[in-house]
Length: 203
Ligand code: GRF
Image 1 (cartoon, rainbow, N blue to C red):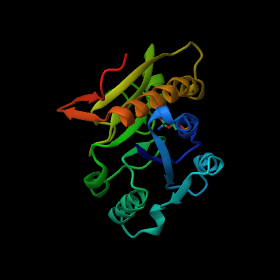
Image 2: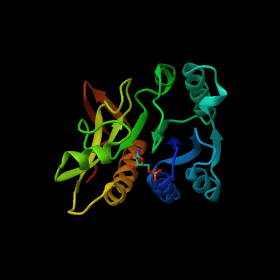
Image 3: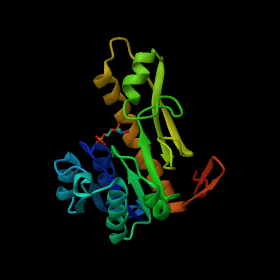
């Protein structure tokens, strides 16, 4: 399956997908990286891997809707079967979702529905939870509210700050994302209400 990755940051999740996609058995191929930030570290990973890149900056558009439409058109150029948002710090609007809804996955560094939004790690730490984790979910019109595909638990350690906790989460998050993008790519997904069924049950 052809996957376009949306990323705004360092791109370690993208790097993990790029490391996996060379194996033909994986089933997913990252065909492009699209970002809203021309200086995103993710672009370096894409260039190193020889993967196409595109930058779609909100400031170049009069309205959010205009940017959202341009983002969808850009992703469509690469004939994406699935879109993976990995540290993409923008909300995908109705225009984008009318084209790619139901096949856009996001990874969030908390156990949704707890701690949605841009500061999930900080909020979980501040709340005093003993465990947090990460979530792979389908993107819907809300913020981190789409049907859940997979989750993994990460312990909060004494002395953690946002950075140490986020690093520990990202270690787990990268492998969760790689595993489930592969399963979706190989076996597809169906959504029944809030239940997501991915591919055929693999042994
Ligand atoms: C990830 O933890 C993602 O869940 C969050 O931002 C982080 C991005 O990390 N939204 P990277 O850019 O993939 O290294």
